[in-house]
Image (tube, rainbow, N blue to C red; front, top):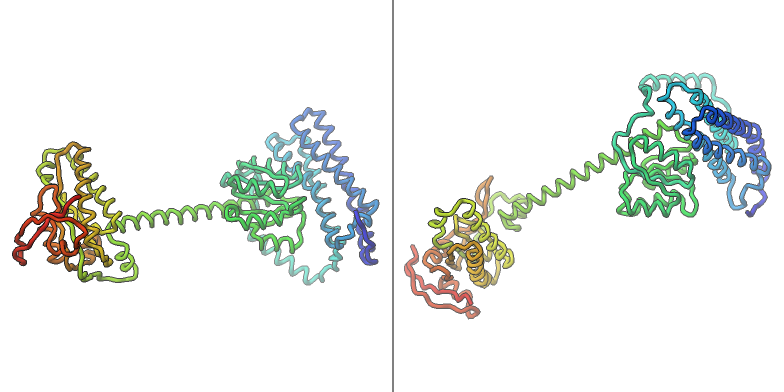
Length: 535
């Protein structure tokens, strides 16, 4: 270890620290060790084997504490690292003193809770005294902190002190005392908690407390292991120590909050450092809370419970939002089964009346020949099954060719191309669709063993299109073109596709036709028609 000479002021403060350690810390620390030796002897005499393992852990922590205090008193100046400020030196010493104290205090509280269910055995009384000694020693360490920082000030004047006491009394009157046995309350939400601490005793105490309250735990001894566990497993909370080798707890916190898959996990920092800077930086980095060691078990439970409750509420909110999104998607899908996307967009923008004049579109009607008579002989479920298979096949073809299904009327199916958005090749799309629809009907008829065929009629011309209705609204088309297309279908033949002269002209030479003849169309007189070649 490298050293540098401290300034005169620093030397005076460090020597004062050594004197304080010798007078105020060494004796209580030795007393804790002696007290533990007596409790261990009594436990062996009472054959309380279940307690001995934890008592030995406490004895080990106590020995560690005494050895550290002794080494500080012998050569405090030499333990001051050359590259560290006096404030950093003080914080390191305080951390190293509080760590074994945390183990002693934590194990004693666990053992006291274990013995509460057994009445008032002698060891329980002794353990309570031991815990009180640890608390007293903790107070001495905190007093040492005040001395090292020169933060001891004169007491406030009596009038100001009286005012503070009155204010404190008013606050305390509004706070409901904790009920007896509050320390033994089960957790509100059993959760998975990751404990990150390089000190085995600290991990052990925390794990045992959390398991008692119904939680599941995992532990990591260093930062890299913590990040690996948090990445690979789901956790509801992380308890994180700050001072660890290789990677500090603050760096672990920063990486957790920077990663998308771990940033949502709440983190409670538990550290021997109680400086405001440490607390503020951890909270700014995303920590849910900050506790100093040794921690109060009841306070720790309350902080953990509050963090888990917020996590649970956030998870519920995420689930609720996700369910809303799923419902929105289902509603969107249902709406798009009724209306074209562009029409839905227009309605969302506030258009109340949607009606368009389309200069040219192509309309197709397809009808199942003889299905009405056949449906009287078929069972209802078989009728629905056949129609369902047939129209589902039609729907797939319509989506593939990007034309618009308008509606079904009984066993008839109506399609339009060139609506609601113009399509230059609307006639070609319908002419491509029609033969595939006939093939689909033949395939379903073969599968269901029903002797059925379809006939199709197509016409091209101007139409009116829009949305009608306010509740069960539909997108529909109207005009002579629609009526003529229906007439083309009704005068067609089974298995044939009849098109008007207008459609024939719109298709040009890209398709083959067979002249059918003429039919009479109401209001238009005689009209020449053609059969579209299915090949």
